[in-house]
Length: 136
Image 1 (cartoon, rainbow, N blue to C red):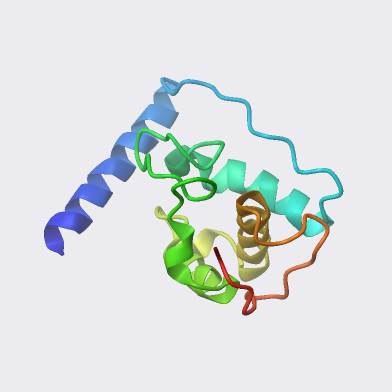
Image 2: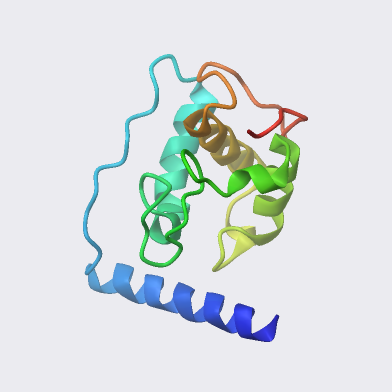
């Protein structure tokens, strides 16, 4: 466990260093889906601001955490439900300081991720803290 935490900390340090030097390859983030709710649009902006550094602007192929977090081969199904994903994000993300964004912002990010993964309609409003929507 210690070794894994050390590797995660080192990866985060590399990501922060890359961001500070501007050495990352620029990718255009996808636009919010057509008909996206205000929550999903906010989640898209917050994802780019707080998550893309480590997870990539498109939720995959980042140098720090290259496994996709939505779409084909994604990792988020392991959380089971929107609430499970929210609880993980609430406790541990953003990696550098989970307290720097509030629960409303984290709910918006989760809503955006679930829309990108095809679990919820773009116009839907996710309740605060998520719900029992299954992640496929």
